[in-house]
Amino acid sequence: MRSFRFCPYCGEQYNNDQIESIHKHCEQCGKWIFENLKATGSAVIIENNKLLLVKRGIEPFKGKWDVPGGFSEPQEHPEETTLREVKEELGVDAEIVKLYGIYSPVPYTYQGYTQHNCDLYYQVKLKSTDIKVGDDAVGFQWFDLNNLPDEEDVAFVSAKQLIQELKSGTSKEAMTNSPE
Image (cartoon, rainbow, N blue to C red):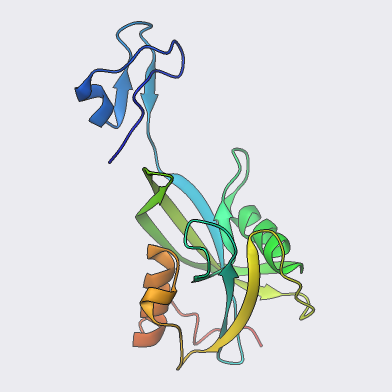
């Protein structure tokens, strides 16, 4: 895991042991930095035995399929994150049906830095079918649960795990309790 090389408080370079540690203590200013899991909120949208996926328009994984979702803002509950991301990526309001599953720790590498996420997936019901993609999504598609994308076409580790669970029938109740 590549990590911070300099103290964000005073700018002092960490020694090699500190660079590789997830808990960093600066010998110059005495401050601590803790690298923790980052929370995300994502939407599992299943209707009529079909899963809604968005095509990513930005890196990482530009052009790959993913569920609508993203990182939680500092004062935002992952449920709020999920609803915000659905609105940003699909242009429609939604409501949380229930917590679908938690995937953690999930490695997330961007621009050479790997952090770990705690991905919270919520089963979501759309309030409208008038979808207009935006934000970082460039397209969407409803996939039949019996014909989901191959793993290499899916963006993130947790989304791949979701797809695998749906393919194998070991999903976390999404298939049996899909919104009508």
